[in-house]
Image 1: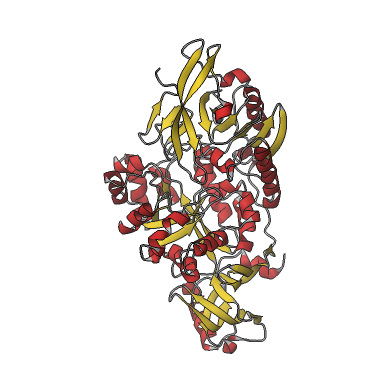
Image 2: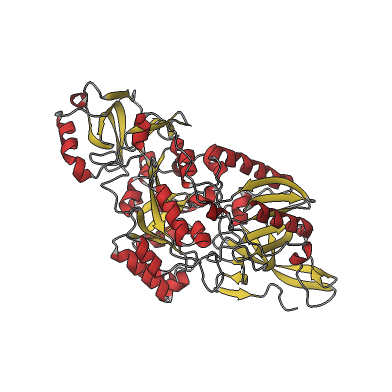
Length: 607
């Protein structure tokens, strides 16, 4: 590995230690390590583009930003001619889950660096729900050795809703208090238990208080359309941001209450276009809006991009390019109290820089982090070695028994006839589901699915403690037309196993296959395996390179389409069907969950 790239893995010294050197470089008394000349400075502080700008970088930080840095050039200074291209701050993802990419932190970084992401604020609550505090610590330590800035939010809700699900681990205020002293913890992850905050649940109150006392940021997650008293109570409880809005009124309400509205464009969540109207049509101050991804699939990262994709989309919705860039850089840094550290091109800040040839299209030619070029023309130049995970975290799928088709039978109240059942309705490109009902046939005392009307079966298989438990239900929206089953050990947030299928035998085969390989995602049709993505680390992440995982994920997507599914990024929809903190209807290891009322309900309705 070249020495220059090795240096990128070393975080810059604190500004206080480098300040005298930065002053000397700015004054011409010392030579810079790198000078970028003749660029157009996208200044996110002033909101303007300044032509004819030079940048001088030393010790991984900007020392000089102005019209002529020739005084900072010495014999050993590397000089780059920007040739009139735009100088853009490295992009920040304000809220995201690495595990949703099916890869480790290291592989996620390798995938997104060529797309201009140089800072990420990650909430590892997926691995926390499987491995508890040990899982958080593993990802925290991996994040700390990356060539870009990866800050970690301590998960707040493990499990996400204690009365409605049983995860693989439990954490509380004591764990949060301990983690706040870790070097790379930036705040508290999304507080999903919004009823707990409103009801002053002692765990939620304790976790938020511990974060506030540490002077760190509390992340929000208010997944309800009710903007009345519960919303006001939630805001009063301390969360400082929220990414769960889907309507323009959601964004407006959050900003008016002093929160930051995080607008997300992930692989399957398209919430920017509707909410950006708060700025483009209602004229609200864009300083209080932040762009993020939340969940990005490995295929999206490799094929479409990351935060560059979000910024382009925001520009397409009518935002000025500089405003969109502010919402993905400076606004994020300010929110996490890091304005003097990152999020802009300005003296003293970490030298995270993009050289961009087309600003509205955000065509990224070169990516620098800490003053070192890591990617060029969409290709990673840095050799980022794989990060080893211990063997014990690859043995987390415990089914307790070998499943068969009968485990997915739904007993009926009588031998024949029809019965009304609750059905989880998938909503394309959004996280919420609909609470539907369907009239279904009873055959030999078992309720049948209705493939003609797109009602197939869903099952949640307990996989943490080996109880052999199976919760059965119905789901609509995937459009499967063939005999098939898709099983996944990624099942936000408790991460049991979700199986969706039109054929019970295939459902059993798919579930048993994941037990055999230690977790992942598999599609089976008529007993034949069509696609498999192995995810041995906690049943959530691969230990392979991101490009390999993306290739397997693409084969999975092809198999889903072959079975009749036309949903955009349908796997992401599949993986959220157990998320009991987002309305309306979900499935968990304790039953069918009506999220709007935060209660379990019967699958079958009275005649």
